[in-house]
Length: 420
Image (cartoon, rainbow, N blue to C red; front, side, top):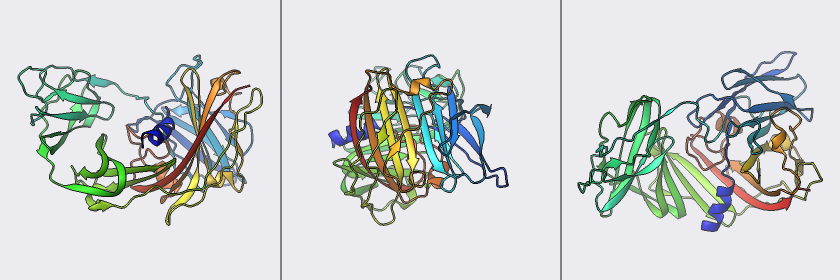
């Protein structure tokens, strides 16, 4: 599982986008409004952005408000591409973190996208020592404490033998109703607690301790898996195996179950109120064998063999996640939908590098370029996925890091080449 987990982790690249598209019928075409957000669903501006219609040239895309971008798909056209350079690095940096989508209007007219790791607002550093945040003493065990942006451990800062203090590196985003949760175990018993707080920039400790209670319920999986509890903002790992604690039955929470087999993966997100005693999940056996020939000098690569089959009943192929990594920490994640690809099995990455601020999206001569491709199938239409708000700390797929009950199957492949 470790080897395949590393493969899927390789797809967990920086930024993620968020779009919102509006229908605007009429003879002039369809207006698309794009809102770029961070993991907390807060609007942010891209370092640079561009769009194109069909196979036309890329045009600069400037915000009309914080994180809001608007363009028109003319009447008679159906396919469009949007590219965002996330604000992880400055415009003059050689490194780049980019997210892009090629879609049809039928597939997505409401679209959210997210830049991973870029937060619009400040965070408070809860660095008060001996804060006694947990009502439960985890001496003889261990516990983690979670916010939307940070996971750390409880410790004994008072040197009094009581492990119930938040580590000084713990941070919480500023704002109302910020979720903070504690999960751990002592002597074979699991414990869970959480609360919601108003956090200001000067907050150094939580206004009140978090009540932590034993967890008595559990659930199982039909095959070895990784399980997480997705709260309103937090993402809590419940471990790996076939048996897991069930800390919550809150209908607003989701349980995420992920399993691997070779380069295949299956994922389910299930509302906590309807979690079965056993989650039946198994990785699919999909036929997917893409290749990437070395591109010509100054060109971006072409992905060949984009055809996948073998998805389970109720799961439909939605498209392909295509990823490039190259030196200086550069990463580009692109999704081409099945509708945009049409009947073709060959796809050249669109080249927006003529647009100011996007030049660095193309690796330079001599760079070692790693590529990954994943065929993605879900039981939800793209419109549902892209309308859902992001998971602040997800698994790295922009398209799938959405807080939405779903079933997903995927098959991945990868390789490398030297840029001529």
